Image 1 (spheres, rainbow, N blue to C red):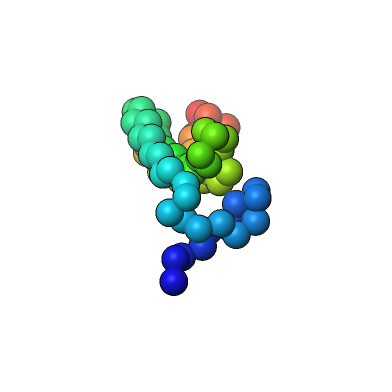
Image 2: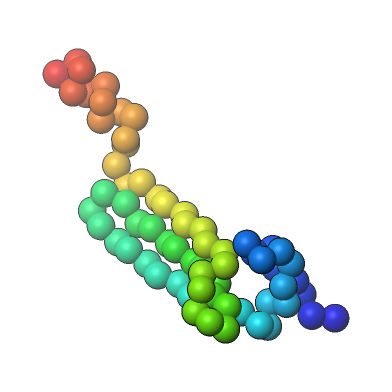
Length: 66
């Protein structure tokens, strides 16, 4: 049985899609992006995960107190 993945076209066999990844590393954050494309090259599923390297919420407090 072929695993299915939910896309904008509904559930499709994962074997019919192409998996892509992209990493972006900056001093402020690291981002991992993954997406699937169909046989026509159309993106049918996409997600991103971001790791903040700086205290985003603390930075605002430091500026406020400073």
